[in-house]
Image (cartoon, rainbow, N blue to C red; front, side, top):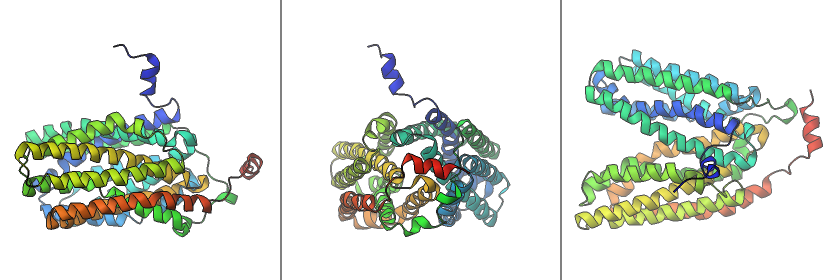
Length: 419
């Protein structure tokens, strides 16, 4: 079957800023794939740290970075998000390369903290850059493309890091660290292809921390953080669940990851349609909560079943889980953009990303206790939390809409922009 040119164009990002943003993310994502795949082995084998030291250091670094999102996002609003995206992207590349010099835990913690802060700041600025350079009706679609290219980059970077794992030499691991820094710097510089976003005039600037007084937005950030705990299911809960509580073969873990990755890459743009409004985004998050609850029920059901039935139930759970992830991401993007004032997108995106970072920190402990500690009742509890969070989003989103100030007319905007 021949694919029409219009169909092919629909699979590509929109020309202009959206295309530049998408392609700038590819090198950075390849770097993430390289680093995540080989870094722990590098730190333990080449540097000599223990797994506990590595895990503790990364957790502390991530906790420190929580405080960077809002102030760095506010700085992006003041001086322009493109400059901040590039600057902190280069800072992240330099800090990643500094892992090459780490020889003890204290140095590891210092470098890991710098990397986490730079990545948090870059993420907040990038959110403001998307909001400022892409038309409102295309923001969620653009974020969907960015997520697709992020997954593609990880798929490219992980096998490349696998070469270092195969060679299993200090030189190979050090090459991965240097390559990660190089491709991350390349990605940061490619953001210069995105047209600059004008700084907000003094008359429209929000004071730093204004987002912290926006109670509806804070509440939605918390609910999205609860829904985002599901990201830890594939990384933490499923491997432990398969190993300790089911009869499924161990290799099914990799199959579940492949199902997730393929569905994200092929369906993220399609499922993001309709999430560009507050109502559509809230509806997507409600779907996400219910789908994630259903996935938890399927994962729980796999315990005690015969080998191949358990494997089939787990694969069905992974597919339902992936649909929940698709809607959770799309809904989160729509709410974070549409409910943030355009003149303060940086600090608003910084706060919303902080909610995701919190969930990333707490998910391993919560899932280990709830799922592995309690067994199938833990899955039911987690599913109930996901469903409750998803169902709570639409009424909170309506509250948030009611508290937004009316949009200024064209004459007001033009007058504010004059020096």
